[in-house]
Amino acid sequence: MKDIKPSDLEMQILSVLWEKGDMTVRDVLEAMPDGKKRAYTSILSVMQVMEKKGLLKHKTRGTAHVYKPAMKREKIIQPFMKKMLNEVFGGKPSAMMQALLTETPISNKEMAQIQEIIKEANTKSEK
Image (cartoon, helix red, strand yellow):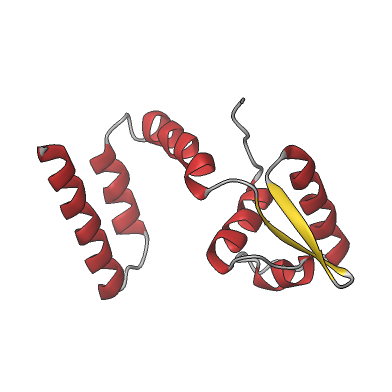
C-alpha cells in the first residue's frame, strides 16, 4: 500500500477523531483545533474525499453519518515524523525534541509523561 499523505486540513480532522473518537461532521467542525470559521459543507466535502482516500470510514446513525479514522495514528504519523526528523533536524532526535520543548508550553503533567516515555525508551534500548 502506498503512503497516504493527508493535507493539513485532513490531518486536523484526523487528529480530532483520534483524540475524541467517532464523530459527526458537525461535531468535527466544532472541534477543529485551528479555530477557523468554516462552512459545514466544506468539512463534509473534505471528509467525503478522505473516505474515498481510505482515511475515514463512516456508519449511519439515524440520519447522520458518524465518522472514524480508518487507520491508526501511527500509520499516518510515523512517515511524517521520520521525514521531518531527517529533512528538518538532520536525523537528530535530540534536535527535534529540543525544538519541541523550547517552542511549546509544557505543563508539569506533560513533562512527567515525556520523562516516562524517555525512561521507557532507555529501557528498550538497553535490551
